[in-house]
Length: 523
Image 1: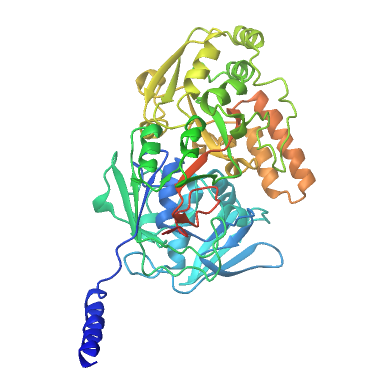
Image 2: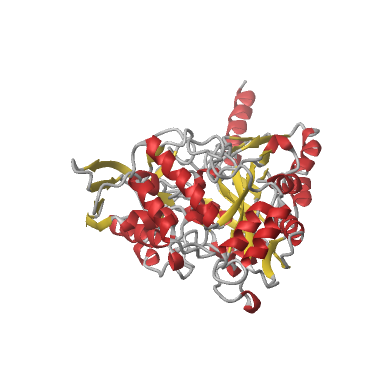
């Protein structure tokens, strides 16, 4: 018995010895829609930079799963009786990745930098008389007049998101890129392991204090449940899908519908739509140079293009796309086809007539053509084929998405490194109204890439921002739609959703307008 007893004791001793090391680090490997080259999510509207922002930064407010604005870094807030003074109190325990406390001064500087760049931020800052930090935890915003979109602006869910940054970083000129990546969010960016074109690496922030609420959309408790996240840059979607099947990655952000049957055969993989609100394709004009400096030439494009062609070529499966002749997403409160029923339907004869009226002289249009982003790489080629039928001359210039993102910011002439048009998509939550939709910003040099300049559009956007009656807001939104027919800023090319594929050993992927990698547990 004694020997048995000793044997038992020895066995327990052995267990104690070998159980001592910590559990193996959990690593989440993902293949996203693009390579990360720009780490400043305020300087650019590129979605991959927004994804990066959500990994490392936090926000004052956020949209939950019902698309309602909820506090995030803010603990509580008050509004004065005259609706002019807003006071926000930061919650306890907020800390930058370098160990310094988050202060209201940091947040004030962050709001100002974002507000100089973002479409919605510009409108908000236009009615702000004073923005200050009375103490370390209090942000005070005094308005010139009541404004109905304060919380919606601060809780904006996608490009450009008002991410909070340290004051020293947020003091950077909004037209210059930041290189510092210190945030206060659930993950820390491993800049020393970042290799553009290869991978970006993030590790769990052990000092992050999530809200004491369940995660919902982009709001609630942001609990990082893996130790390390690796964004792997793989050359094409077929390679990404193969890596998923082989267990080399855990998640593929965008799977083309034609590859879904391949994944359906694998019991270790499941497919879901993360952004159920979907996205809207768009062609963006550069109004600074010929021929798109002439509104009639842009109107010709509105008639010539056909949404169906773009959706078929870039999505293919009708289960994942929808034709929608509305500037604002179909299914949203401001959906309307007023004035647009005969547009975007391939009317080449009407387009030719408008080009003749415009006196089009054969100036070629430089199309920036992204070749590496799934679901977008046939946008420019479809447009080229359709517009050449009208007599427009197209200079198609292929490049990867991140090169396009850098080039579209240039105001040079098209024959000197500039551009005439590019193609992209917006999350439906980005374009819900005339103020949030960046491509409707017509404030000239302050507008985003393309730089439309139209006082009438700006008056309508201001009116929308100040109106609180939903019925009157709808009337203003329809007036915006009609004005865009006279002064086109862009062309909506249909709505779509994108399937995301994950291995079945992952739990907790949230349904969000922008990809959220907290709350994911890897078994």
